[in-house]
Structures are given as C-alpha cells and as structure tokens.
Length: 314
Image (cartoon, rainbow, N blue to C red; front, side, top):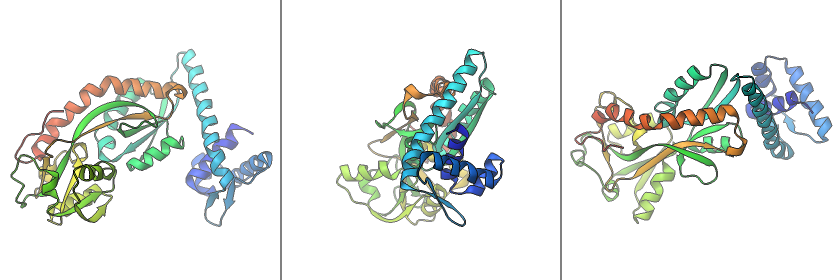
C-alpha cells in the first residue's frame, strides 16, 4: 500500500470517476485503474464499482475511505512539520466555505493575509451549503470549515456574530417599522431558505409556538431576494448573507431586525484539533487575530441596506 494509491482512491471516490481523477492528477486513466486494482488486490476487497461513465464506492470502500483520508492527513501533517523544522512553510490547506457569509465576507480577507504570510502553502477551497461543509469535515475532505456555531461535534473557534433579518417587499405594510416580530411574519407566505438558515429559522417559530405558511423552500439566496422584492412572500436571512449594496441591487427589498433580536455566531471548525496540520493551526491563529476587525468592517457596508433603522452594532 502506498500513499499514491490512497490518494488516487480518495480522488476517484470524491470525483466519482476514473477519467476526472486522472485529469486532476495529470496521469493516464489506465494508471489510475492500475493503482486501484493493486490496492484492492492488497486489501483483498473491492473498493470501487466500475460503471461505464462513473465510479461508485462499495460498502467496504465507504468505510475505508475515512481511514484513507486519516492516513493522508497525518502524512501531510508530518511533511509540514518537517518543513517547519527547516524554517519552511509548505504543504496544502483544504477549506470548506458556505454561502455569502464566509465566501464573500470572511474568507477573502483571511486568505489574502494568509497567502502573504505563507506563500508556500497551497489553498484549496470548496464551497457548498452549510450541511455540505459539515459533511466534508466529518469525512475529512477539508481540514477546516466555516460553520454556524455552536457545534459540539467539532473543535470550534468563534469569529463573528451577526443577527437574523426579516426580508420584506418595500410595499409591505410593515416596511416602515424599525423591527418585525415572528408573529407578524406569519401573516404572509413565508419563503424558507434552504441555504443553511432553515436549521436556525424553524426552531425560532417552533419555540414561539408559531407556524408560518411556508409554500416555498429555496436554496439560492438571489432567488429569495428576487421573490421577496416581487411581493411573493417574506423571509428571514442572516445579516452577513445580504448583498453589501442591497439598496441599489434590490430597491424594492427592505431588511429589518427581528424583535426580539436573534443573533447568530459564525466561526471555524476542525474535526480534531490534536490532528491539525501546521498549516491548519496557522490559518486558525491568523483568523483569530483578524476576528475583531472582521465584523465591524461589515457594518458600514450593510447599514444603508437596512431600511429606516440603522443596523444594530455587532
């Protein structure tokens, strides 16, 4: 068994295909197939089911995939630690990011500083919904991920806090208010965000013993903004998910704080801090140092978009 075989195995599993893995590795498809067959022969089990245009993990393959990622992760940590002894910063860092909150408002600033400090570390960024980042962390597909906190399944570090905002069409009778209650939002069709906010929003109504009319479940934020602007319904989204120029992009949309306010924490998570690579620890430390400046930097950009009342400082 070699590290190359394990790397090929994990890549075929993630990309669900031999040709895609071969293209990313810069080798022939036959080389990928040969490496997997050799690994399966040594293990004595089938790891991959070959289809004409795709590949699928067997049950044993799914179980061993986590072990393969653990081994590759430890190997990467050893290489980075050896490089650190020599005064070098080398290796790679895999980051999971979700939506506008992290991908637009947090990640760019942190990665820009990180690249300046550690130019020898390659950053690999995967973007998806909140639940996908959670899955990537569990499956060790990423070293560190942005998450809504708290989450006791991982070692976490909070970065910023924002609030949940009610979205209304500007023509709505409540658009001139300074805030909106959950009960008031139940009077209109409710557009539920499936981009990650649902896990926060649904318990809000349930704990208040309210049941909104939810005819729409939408995963794309831009669609939610458009639907609310057109008067299709109302919604709730996180403050940092709002476009920085909401008023100009969506002039018929108003965002108001909830009454009482509902806050949300966003931070970074790793599966097990004890297994962090030096690159992961360096990223966490840099993010911790930058955290005090991240949230205040958002306030001036978002304030004009919030309608009649300035944003509550966070």
